[in-house]
Image 1 (cartoon, rainbow, N blue to C red):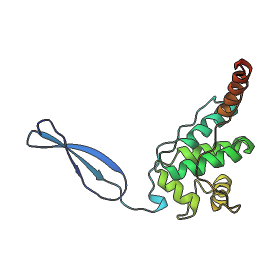
Image 2 (image 1 turned 90 degrees about the vertical axis):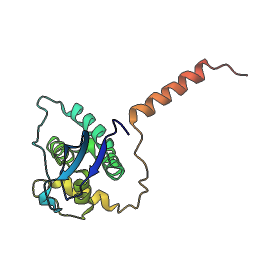
Image 3 (image 1 turned 30 degrees about the horizontal axis):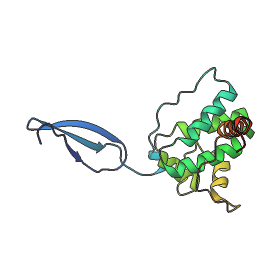
Image 4 (image 1 turned 90 degrees about the horizontal axis):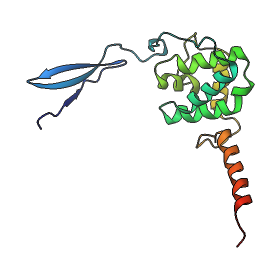
Length: 172
């Protein structure tokens, strides 16, 4: 096992910080968690950086993408379906709240627990968009939410390809 990296994982609550230590001449990567606690107030958030000069249309397009690409299937489903249904109808201030809500928390599981009501959201995120998301997550219409919605531009592209194919195909 020459050149193999040994991985030692030390499990402690909250934020992971990788550290490299040496066991003889071989490096050992250790993950330790320096921040303890599991409450919503213990969530670690990165400094918020808005995107100045971004148009509302561009922001909505970015948020639609970011709602689909979360890293956890649960959030991908909840947020992509929510964005498909509500994003175009949100006011500019609500779009900003949604942007901050899905991009500021560093832990997607915190976001999921806030939306589903398993934990109370911090006051910073306890706003009208969070309440809209929480109502949406209750699924009062009993919809099946098993996959992300199709992207509109793919549907229009496919239908135009089908029309072009039918014009160029020869009857047999």
